[in-house]
Structure formats: C-alpha cells, structure tokens
Amino acid sequence: MTTFIQLHFLTAYPAANLNRDDTGAPKSVRMGGAERLRISSQSLKRAWRTSSLFKDALNGAIGIRTAHIGREAAEIMQEAGVDQKKAAEWGAAIAKAFGTPRNEKGDKLKQDPLLNTETGQLVHISPAERQAVHQLAQRLGQDKRAPTAEELELLRHDDMAVDIALFGRMLASSPDYNVEAACQVAHAVGVSATVIEDDFFTAVDDLQKKEEAGAGHIGELGFGSALFYSYVCIDRDRLLENLNGDEALMKRTLRALTECALKVSPTGKQNSFASRAWASWALAEKGNEQPRSLAAAFYQPITGSQQLSDAITRAEALRDNMAKVYDGQTLPCESLNTVTGEGSLTRLIDFVSE
Image: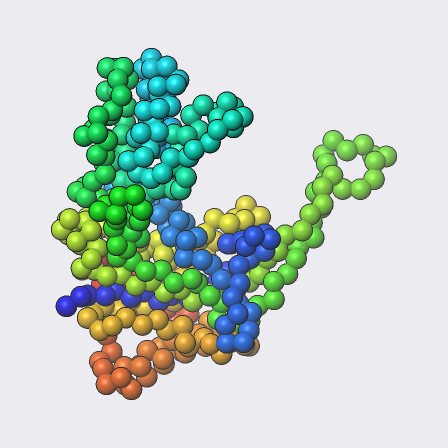
C-alpha cells in the first residue's frame, strides 16, 4: 500500500504581493463566494527549491530549470576554439536531446547567433545530466567535431535530482525520461475575504533642485494581507522510487522540503514589503488512507480578530469529523502550534522523515 505524507499549515502574511497576476496585482481566487488572496503552487515550489535552506540541505542533488543548456554547451565549445557557426549547430543538437530548439531566422539570429541553441521551453535537468553536457562539450571542443547520435543520449534515470523526483518532469520529445511527481502542492488560499488595495507611492530625486517641484517618480502597487492555508501531499513510495531507492537521500529531501514549506516565503516584492513569515500552525499526517485537503474548513470565510485560532479550530474539527463520518481512524500525526506553544519543528520533521 502507498504511504502518503500530508502537510497542512497556516501562514500569516501582512501587507504583501507575493505572487502577481498579469496586471501586477496579487493573485486571487473566488472561493465560498468571497475574494481570497492566492499563491500559486509554481510560486511556492520555486521559492522552496531555490532557497538557501534547500540548497544547504541538499547541495549537489538539486537540478536546474533552463532553456539555455544548449547555449551553455556552445559557449564551452567556443572557448575551446570551435567557430561560432559550428558551435551553434552542435549546441542546437545538444539542446534537442532535452527539448525542441528554437527556430529563429533573420535579424534576431544575426543579433544572437546562438539563439537557436535554446529550447523553446524550460527543461528540468539533473546535476548528472548537466555534467554530462559539459563533459561532451569539452570533448567536442577538443576534438573539433560534431556529436554522435550515441553521445547525444544525455538523459538519465539514475542519479536523479531531488527536485525532479519531488515535482516531476515532462519531456514531450523524450517521454521515456518523464518523471511522475511524488509531491503535489495546492495553491495557498486566504482563509478570509480580502480586498486588494493599491499603494500609490512617490520617490524623491536626491539631486532634485529646490526650485523643481514634484516627485522624481510616481507609481502604484497592489497588495493585500491574509492568513493562508497551504496543503502538500507526498507519495512517499513514489519519491523513494524516483530517487532509485536511496532511502537516506529521500529522508534528507523530506526534512528539507518540510522545513522549507514552513519557513520559506515566495520572493515576490520582498524588497518592498519584507513579508517573510513562518507557519503559525502545522499538521503533518502519515498513513495509507487516501489523502484529502482540509480546504473545505475555509469555504465560509473567517471573520473577526481571532482568525488564526479560529482557523486552527476549524481545520482540526474538520479532520476529526472526516475520520468519524468516513468510519476511519484519525491518521498518525504531529503538529506545532505557535498560539499555544505546543509541538516543535524538530518533532514534526522527524515524524515526516522517519
């Protein structure tokens, strides 16, 4: 049977614009008849996997998402003395091993002769695959020759990156090397109705003369504040399979992911708002029962001044009632609560990773 690890947590953000839509305003969703703030799962995952906390814990095992792997190879070949035309051609061949290279012509290509060494989409590449590309480019640069078909088999199943194992990979041109995600991340949503506000701001020109009136710059910036409910579901067995059975690496990955989820904020507009926050409440569950979010606890928006305590009460009540009416057992769990001072991060992480 499959073992699922479920993380539920509540994080309070003051004025913030953590994840913007196409107009620059904070992302939102209409839920339970009310407008809520929202942070996309893509934004959360990128913040976690690129954080210093994640890198320090899993240094050397984290992949990169890039469209520039072929350009990187072409530049290595050029440094070794390969002329630009051949470096572009061979770099595009290497890029094709990971995705579909661009097919630009005319002025764009004249301005940037290596443009078609880029893939048309971002590709998630493991450290082992990137190292193989570098080694191939150095070899081609030294030999001054094109890569063979065998050398272009750069994708690998072994020595997998932890973030690819967690969040998956889809390669339309090489489906055999797709990786099914072991970790599902819900969009974080505010538990209360929120009005998105506009901050009209001005900036003063320090060198402005006294006789000159007006601001050096004016602008508007959308922002909002909410207590967010977040939910993460990890298929422990699939994660172990994706990591080729490396149990020690899987445990390190679970520990790092859990701590990042509770401590790391999306980077959007942090310089303007310094809206960094740690989760105020977290619940980790583990078991074979089919996973379920506790978002239903917040379909009716929470109002009043005790939103954190009310949100915790609602989430825990829904968990207990679901177990009761579905004739199940409450799953083994560990929690921390900053309102009451109960639980600890160490115990919660130990529970998740054991």
